[in-house]
Structures are given as C-alpha cells and as structure tokens.
Image 1: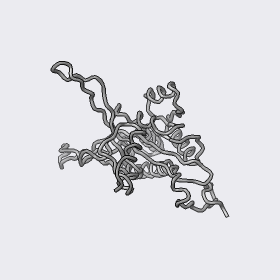
Image 2: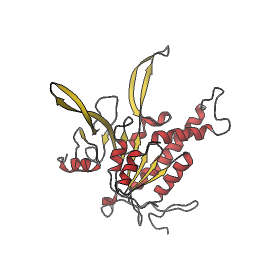
Image 3: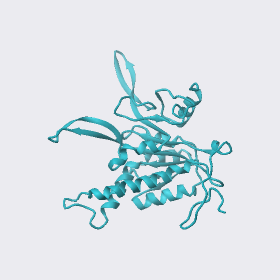
Image 4: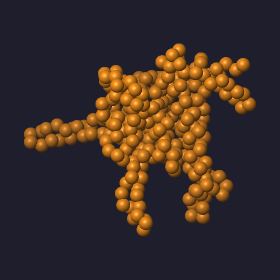
Length: 278
C-alpha cells in the first residue's frame, strides 16, 4: 500500500493524508496581496518568515534585492514565461524548496504568460488577432490547476515541509456598459488576471488583503507637507467594489482583525494574537 502523503506519479495512486489534531498545527497560510503598483505588496511578502523563495515575473526586483543585500534569506527565481511558472509550481508542489515562505510576484504578469501561450497554438486567434472564445476555457482551466497546485503546499504532508504562500496581484476594474457600448460605471475591482477567472481567483486563498499607500503629513507652520508614505493593509473591504477576507481569523472562527493593519507579517500576526476570540 502506498504511504499517505506520497507524491503521486503517472499511473500511481496514493491515499489522501488526513489533517487532524496530530498535524493541523503544521498547516500554513495563503495570502493574496492585491493593490496598485508601489502599494507595498512585495514589501509585505519580503517580511514573511524566512527562508523565502520568490518567483518573480515583475521587471522591478529592487525591493527583494535590497532585502537580500541587507542579509535576509531570500532567493529569487526569475520567471520569463508560462513554462518557467509551471516549473516553479512543480517545485513548490513537490516541496523541493528549503523555505518557510514561497512568494509569487506577481500573478498579473503570469496571466499574460498563459494568454501568450494559448495564442501561440495553431488556429488559436481570430482574423483580428484576438484569442478565440473557445480558447479562453483552456486559459481558465490551466490557471485553475496550477494555482491549486501552488496553494496546496500550505497543507501538511508526511516527511515534507509545508509553506506559507503569498501571491501578489494588480487590480482591474470591471466596467459596466449600456446597450450602445458606452461605459456607465464600475461593478467591481477584481484581481487583474485573465478572463472570468478573476472573479473567483481570491476565493482560493485563506486571506485577501488590500495594500495601500497613505501620504505621511507633517505640519510645517500652517501648512501640512508630505514627508513620506505609510503602507497599510485593509483586512476589510473599504466599499462594495472590493473583496477582502480573513479566513484565518474572523471567517475561521478564531480572531477578528481590525479594519486595517501595518503592512508587515509581524504586525499581522500581532493583530491576530491581540484580538478577542469571536
């Protein structure tokens, strides 16, 4: 009989490993960090438990490189295409990295990779160069499978490490149009990933936090001057357009976070620990 928790290979079956009182404490957390460029997504990810392995698809890597030069235990793997991303996911799924945290920065670029991969297939595009509608089903399916493989590494596995997972993503407005094609409003602000998958993307994570930058003001005489910026995370959606959740705390029935917290892992854990039980 195959031992529970054994990695599955083609043609080989394995028994699911139960999660119970004997190993539940080894489960880790998956966090989706959603926000505009420069809002602190990568900053938060770099504050998570070390060693950190980070798959980077963004061209700007100054934040993690700066942390590395300061002595933080962070290893970067540049991901240049969909094949690179699939390699990274396989390494995470098989628990091959010596890491406490695995970060993907950012999924928005990965989404571009999967679309480019789909468009490179024979007869995949229309005459005007757009991806055929039928091909979008494959794009959604590929994203779904790979994301679940990545996030599954938060679960305990016999003889293998489990990882905290952080994924960063930009934002995309969902426009509303009238019958004449004129934009009349915005129905939601979702993670910027391809196709209809963006509407359910965040549901796969334990937590969705919105990263924001607020100007730091200092009064000079009678005038308030901007002297810097504070990075915070919204743990509760500020309005109906956004989605945020705390599946580890409030939704998980243990602790309820305040509406926003300072943008670091230590501050988040401290907030969880300091809040009353629900």
